[in-house]
Length: 280
Image 1 (tube, rainbow, N blue to C red):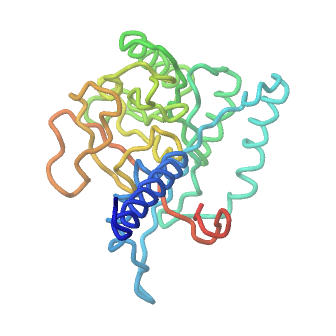
Image 2 (cartoon, rainbow, N blue to C red; image 1 turned 30 degrees about the vertical axis):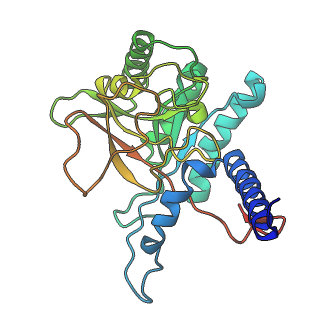
């Protein structure tokens, strides 16, 4: 017959195991299991600047710009575009940065929603100094060959038809920034939905992408364990979520065939708590 101390220890172990399992399931549902440990390890780097210290702020607005969202009618989509063209200069035209330029909004326009009329209007906004157009794509069950053809055709269309995108200063080749629709960059969702191309990073680099701006994606399962970073991913790795880790900018030489990933901030918001306990 078991002694009471042993019974108590077994019960405590079972309860602890069950509690740990419930906590893990809760973390997984919120996508925290992908990045909570790296977040905790970064605690020492998240420090407020010293009072009076000079701060250099680089602000990047990377918009998944979709005027056709929510199955909008052509009239509604056209109104959305026109509102940006009309209201943005009026609201922000009097602001200037340290180089004397107005705030420039970055529209990542989706390939599959291309409309010449909308791009012409946005191109005028860009030529007036208020914006930039980059590449955005939703795709599913795709192939590397089709993806390569789509990206090459779209970047040439934006450059030659609308006068958009940047060009390499040395070669004159068209370059572009990229955002992956539904965050499924490099086939990073567990079920393979929303992409299908395990070597997408390599295709992006080969077709002239200078940087990817997809992340962060939490609470999506596409979220990487690398957070709050500018880093280089090795495009020679042809497996799902190959960009999960990489070489941080300034912390060593980049891989021989690297693609720059520019992440936005991912933090726990303790000012908003679910059940008064769990941070947003």
